[in-house]
Image 1 (cartoon, rainbow, N blue to C red):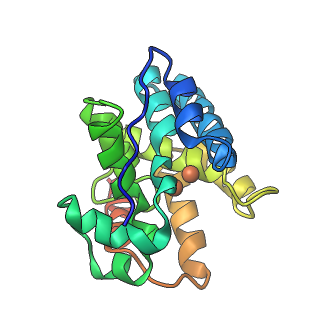
Image 2 (cartoon, rainbow, N blue to C red):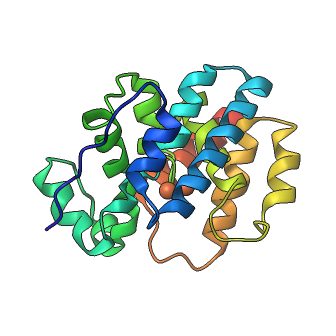
Amino acid sequence: MSTLKKPILTQDLTSDIRNYLGSEFEHVAVHSIEVADCAAALVERFGGDREAAKQAGLLHDISVVVPNEEKILLAQQLGIDICEEERQVPMLSHQKLSRYMAKELFRIEDSSVLSAIECHTTLKRNPSKMDQLVFLADKIKWDQGGEPPYLTKLESALNHSLEEASLVYIDYLLSNDILVIHPWLAQARTALIQQRRS
Ligand SMILES: [Fe+2]
Ligand SMILES: [Fe+2]
């Protein structure tokens, strides 16, 4: 059972995260910095709090330090609600664990930052602008190497709205063989379609 290592906190969140992730997870630190920069660029375009977007991007995958096979047990011990789909695919719980770590270990208090971290993989019912900015930044700067197959479509949808762009990614996911459909993803899709109509 892993216990969560405490970070050394300075005034510089980027270096705190680099130090915390260490050489083992340097690729995640690099990805997180790219997501933070992309989220900040999306704030320039769509409005919002630049600093909040950066913090959420930097911390969104911080729970990578917890091995997938330990995530569910740890989440339960920490009192985090886990759904059946997360039990089936434990990686899906990493967004909730990252939120916990951002709040309890990195002392993030801004609820908009914590919310965006918590749903960066699946979005959720009635996602906020910040939720979508961070979700989309994570998809634009994906961590799989090469260019994401949905990128061109997503970027052209961004010329219309955040909602359209979020739906492009969700529909891409649903058209591929994903292992389970997280309930938050389905709820987000319904809400985004309604927002698009209104
Ligand atoms: Fe993630
Ligand atoms: Fe990520």
